[in-house]
Each structure stands twice: as C-alpha cells, then as structure tokens.
Length: 215
Image 1 (cartoon, rainbow, N blue to C red):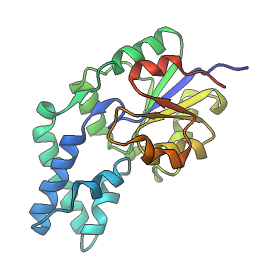
Image 2 (image 1 turned 135 degrees about the vertical axis):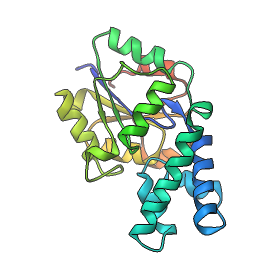
Image 3 (image 1 turned 90 degrees about the vertical axis):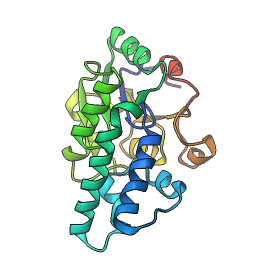
Image 4 (image 1 turned 45 degrees about the vertical axis):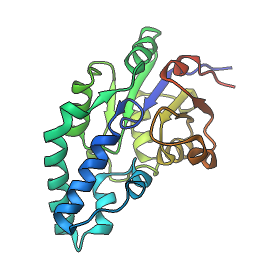
C-alpha cells in the first residue's frame, strides 16, 4: 500500500485564523457601498471562493465589483497584522511533514499578495514548496483546477496526496482532482457542514495531520 507523500493545504480557516478579519472586511465593504451588510452566515457560506465571486451578487456591475474589492482590501490590509494569527500547532505539523521528506503546498482562493502577507504575519514563511493562489488559475475551488496545478508543480501523484481544508469547496475540489481530502475541524465550519462532501479524514487538531494514513 503506498504512503502519502504530498500534503496540500487551504490557507484561511486551515493554516491561519482569519475569520474575524474576513467578516469585518466584508461588513465594512457592504456598509460603504450599500449602507447595510448581510448576516455573517451569508459570508461564511462563501468562504473558500475568490473575493470577486463573493462580492459580485451585491454589485450593480463589474466596475462596482472592482471598487468593492479595493475597499475590502484597503480595510483588510490596514487591520491585517493585529487581527491575523495562526492556528496553534499548524507550523509544528507542517515542519514535521517536511522533516519527514514530504512535499507541502498551499491551494488557496486568496490573491497571492494577501497570501504572502498572511504567511509572513503568522510566521509560516519558508515552509511551502509551492503556492497556487487565486491569481494563478482561471478556475477556482470548488473546481479542481488549482489542485491539479499544485500536483503538476510538485510533480506529485494524486493517489499519494491529501488536500487539507476547512470548507466544502476544499472537499469538492480535492475529491474531483482525485486526491484524498481531510476536513480541518478547527476552522469556522462544523462537521455537519462537511459531512455531505465525504472527506476521507476528520481532523480535530493540527497534530492529527501527522496521523493520516492511507486506508
């Protein structure tokens, strides 16, 4: 039986705890452009998809989407460093995977600039061999394209790869790319949110990543 040798990670909600910052950034953006903001559950349902995808339903046209994106990012970056943190144990888990000779990468729907900023703030730089960000692909999670690109960049075998994420979009993208999936339950979603997507593994804490084995 082959062993896993490649570990792909979502970023927000999996490696870094950015929920409060994301929600406040959305609220601020909609208040500026619309004068009111929907409930947080509306935003949480779309976490894991690109920023433009989430903002588009609230904009009148493509030009306003871009203005909303600018507003979101201005607020997000201004408040980033004081509100962003890593989940306890994530750096230790990734470091242990690398020390054991595994390949590790990030597959995120976040733009590359924001991804790099988050990794720096949370002390996670220098750990990942590749990053596939929203800017790098034309199709995004739940489409499997970004996972396929990460596999190609790492010269990885899908049968020996697991994608670790917190959202239904991560589970769907990994499944359709033919890799195993692992649900990170320390993120913003409950097990009941992810059960319909049948992840191969359930992880209660980052240390559980080191105990994943192929069935």
